[in-house]
Length: 515
Image 1 (cartoon, one colour):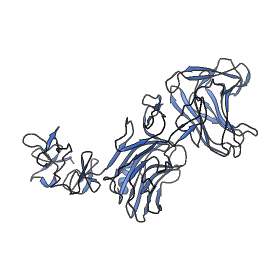
Image 2 (cartoon, one colour):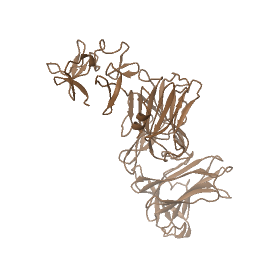
Image 3 (cartoon, one colour):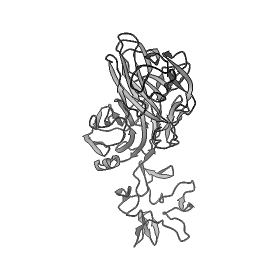
């Protein structure tokens, strides 16, 4: 099916104005003078073949003859009853990805479509704040700092693939001198530090080298720090092979009996083996992430002890035979940069420090004007987002208010997705994908549709289920991305795309858009 109704080689947008013998073709309806004709009012100007009103708005059809009386204009498009009015007729079929009415005219269906992958700026409808700088990898794979209130459109530093808008909770790096291992704050045992020995992940000559001595001993650098007992901490550091291509990273209790969480990493391929001591209370994360140019970010996270507040972090050389205790050469080692210890069950983006511990503020994003495109009675929300490692509840998108009232919630709930349709009393119907159905770190396409009588949900082309709803309400005045009112339940991952439909898509349509 072609896009436009055509008579005598001229596209006709207004079904009421079609002539006998009209055919359909990929053309544009023209006047005899060659201007595009779309059933316009007197005084309409033409710009590039497109009819424009005197105020610069696209004249799709005559507002007096073809559009409802309540029509307003938003970004140049006519809107009525929260729907784009490309045709006065209701949508009937979808062809080539576009909805058509029974007369063959294009009918509006999507009211919001935000694509964050590879973006350089946010759509003007999105409000974004972060009360500090924040780091991210740019399109060249270099770790870069974003200014206060500047969004972070992150890239995979190894593949250079665009990952989307990074949204994280607030975190603090508790380690001072995070890139200065030569400072006295870092104790060295049968080792030394050569400062500024190679280029770091941020493209500057600031990475240090941990070098062994000729002793037959453990060769390491360590940092003692006071922590809160029975609390998750994430310890991470960037490492790169030199003469040695293995390293041990661990943190734990500084006093006996020792309890430590650690891994030994092969920096040739990123593989690792566990290297715990004692029985840690819990281990949340062990990860090795390539960040380009031979660098890896190595992280361990968990609770090492229920009562101790005496903690430490450590980087130990491992010789190429896999030994942690060995006779060194006095000149061999590997490169270090960007140490971070943060309270949390998983690592977040790097927070550089010098003389004091520093905090990165939370990323907060929302669309603060829902009128006139949002339909509180029924609708569909689609999102593409990265499911991070941590198995916690995280918001993807949620309409609500400053008082935390919510219409619906699209979220990750551990390694599954959750779509909840809310009521005034905060009760509602949750439709969840099966537990463990998602892979940590994977990109997920997920959508939920709601009406006053049903909630539908699909993810990655699969149907989660349907539920019967209680009565709905209409109180939302903004749409949150990656968190909710009060800055909670942060995504701590990448938001790639968000699309809103002012109608409840069918189960088959939900499967199609998430496949």
